[in-house]
Length: 437
Image (cartoon, rainbow, N blue to C red; front, side, top):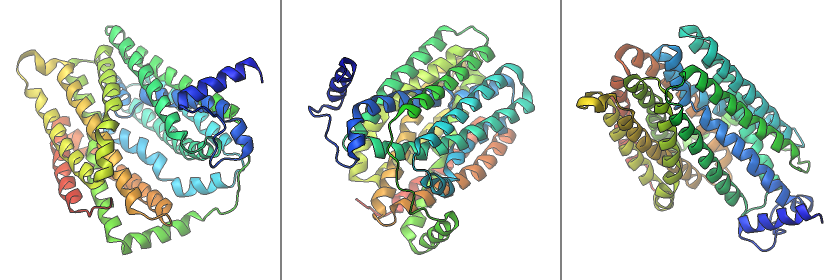
């Protein structure tokens, strides 16, 4: 074994906390031999993807871009729905397509390359477009990015399951999240230093760096050693939808859960409007965006430990408490414009509310994921997850369009009051759910 391979194996064993790199519970022997090398390729891929996701965030960076180019406010309301629904809606059909490929890493690579292209298109929009035309082009590029994201997401999970053994995957995702979080914080700090630079130019550079992150993701994925997988057992997407809708009709708890999940969309939909309010009050200087990126990164790093243990005891309780937090954050965000003196024109109050809402939104996501997994059985879990995601994608588009129109007519502050009322509905709905732990 070459010296570099020995060093790589030792580093792998140190990172995973194991003395035997050949502990492979559920992957083939050939994959076991390549596991240390594949571990680091997955790490590089996750770093590139996570960094790119943060630097092109539909909840933060793209609303800031929309403000810089002067796009209509109603378009901001479509950013999060398009980003989320584009990867959720096609899941039934994409999963069947991927199932027909013996090596799924090339689907992953294709998705990453398309995301890189979309990020470059967004970068061009930041430099050369304005107004309604610019906003339309941003939304078009985001549709392309979102669909490619869904393609990569499903393939990534499949390849991970084939190349990294159980009891290693969580460690891998933990290390990748920490490294990417640190890189995101550095990016935010750099933006704070570039406070007085032209906003459109720096945002364009930011999006170009995001494109580079997805290129890193594609290159790392292409080098992963993946054994061919089975191609049998694919299911027709329409048959799955029919079965899923019948289950939705028969299982009242599942129907009630999806109602609560729909009302909890308020946490995701409120984030870009708080960012936009912060920009409107404090100006388009990049220091404000840098501050929001930094506080968002810190909040995301501390959020999961806050909610994780509680979700194991009562995921319903986490959904309810996160809905309470959403209502409070929306009310706070709407009231910030009436702060006395210079505080109303400072980015810091908006950054504080944004960070709190990021923590709350992680609670929403963790609570609903845990509840859905615990509610379903081994036989119907995959179908319930796919159906719930598809329903959420449809609702994201419908509600996002309505919310955008309301923001255009009444303004972002009034819109946050409406989302606070929606969160109150989520509190009541989540409280009525049965415990499933």
